Length: 171
Image (tube, rainbow, N blue to C red):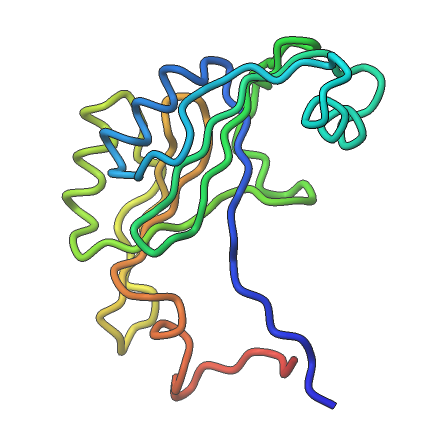
């Protein structure tokens, strides 16, 4: 029996200032707008009840927005009002469980690095050739709010398919 195959739908990211982050992701990363920032309240409305069920009794208000990348993968943005969003001291805790970055594909990693730094973000690594015999490159950056954004210069499957001398555990 074949396993169910899933496609990536969206990723949720929390920001301390959703309005600024929305503009940054739209204008700097070129994301398409699906829904501008709007408040969701624990007010007994249908959507309020859904969000309350997800986040629990401590939740009271959140601002949400929705963008999409060029390939259709969504970015669901959050700014919690009650309880208030905070920025942890270390936003690059790669060793903790859970998602620690997302990756975008670009044909020009150096231009992406320059774009990130010119717009308040940081470059966290050099641009690396991922495998010695390959032309594929990787770069780690950070948006102005601490979210880690990796860049590849080819689609993910092209990095890891048909790689001689590189072995990964079988699924």
